[in-house]
Length: 127
Image (cartoon, rainbow, N blue to C red; front, side, top):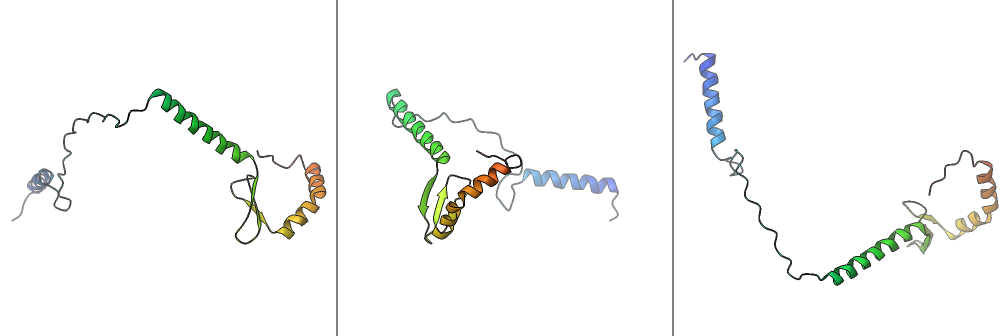
């Protein structure tokens, strides 16, 4: 029963070769890669679009994208579910304040402007 190291390695290699040739019992798939199949021809569109219709569709999409981009640079406001004022367009998230908070902020606009003017060198400007 004593086998040499060479015999055991040869037996191990033979078992590996047999396992590679058989299908994977868990997945039922061959372990060796299969030959690639020929690519299929692209199917023709069912309803070909005329050039004029395509131009009209692309023009409409372009205008919608421009309107969406413009809406990101303008401010918009709405009343939140909790009754607060939400201002969109300043950053990624809206700025939401209740009416009393907004009135206090508006009342202190001159002080805020003075502070900005005094600290202009250290404040960062983002678009």
